[in-house]
Length: 529
Image (cartoon, rainbow, N blue to C red):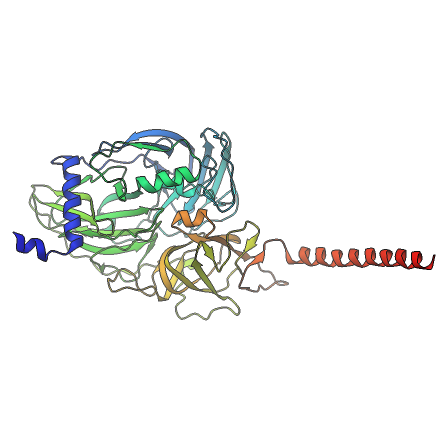
């Protein structure tokens, strides 16, 4: 019908055409979503051997073959399942061959050097835990040990390499894994507890951008072949390492989708479940305060996560999960022929939050602890990343406020999630005042209270090409004591202790004065002679 064709919005036509292309490649039906290898803790410990290694994988439902860097040779890597109070021990070995491509500061480089980041976990940012300034060379190993606090909230997180200079190449190539912190018994409502769990690991696969990243890094490992029915200039979204997998379900049953957006380039993950109910449960591993929140789409920032309750109504039906930014059907829900299950609407629930997630909306900000953080032109507050510089400094138990300017950038904070106080919000219902995030796009005010871990807190853009090129910095949380109650400072300062700087400066002045005295005396003596 030509009238329908000419009145259909352009993005819808593009989505239809792309869907047709994918359907041609995938055939009449795509394969069932693949289960992921899972490792769970026992006796409060999860100990595992882990590698980053070169591997060649074929993308199911396509003719694409990737040669890339993967965790344990798997795309995605194994899922880690933990509980509050657990100790995570990762015996990590960099099995990549050294291509002799050195690190160049604030440039895409060092493709074979690596490390680990436990993205979203509320854990220490210092060794042997989540310290991303530590570098593991090809052939070397390191034993990561990180302990989750006893009051760590259950939630959805992930793990990925974070070597400055090669983060985008390694994450964009597929090196990532999901981390699930299990809910304590009786914490969530039975409707949530008993829902079918769907692990939905969406990865941003962008062949052309990956080729450019590989070339900029002088990398000879990454390559892709196939993709004859796909425009390699376009961004693709894989789910659990597949193109458009099928998720089977029963009509009327509630499903809990744990969604990860393992992204390294532009574009949020705006998922729309065609014809199905969507109720927001959690974002970035923290439950919302007004569950169940009705939404029509997710708006997940690069590196972000969302837990969504989904219910589809009709038996013998197929429902598309669409990524509107990418104009792609990324997965399909196939409803069985069985009669619809009887399920009640979700009941209202407000979680009991642990101390590190205390509501700060009406709490006074500690004196001197309100600072501005602006992401722009590959810099933060006009400065490129330096290993010896802290942007802002605070202290244990302070109430910290940051006015964030990250329009077009994905602001990510390690160690402590932050609460949205004002700004950022949209008209979809996905983002609201009082929500907790560790990754956000836009402009607004956030607060957090560092009350557990001291040390460095990394801040960066999660468009990882920007991070590799210098859009990263550190904050620092100082311990407190009776003699040192704590102060905050805004603006970049060297990470060398200020007393040492003063001492060196005074020493230098004294030396210059002494040298000047003897030089003057020498010339005075020469004049007399």
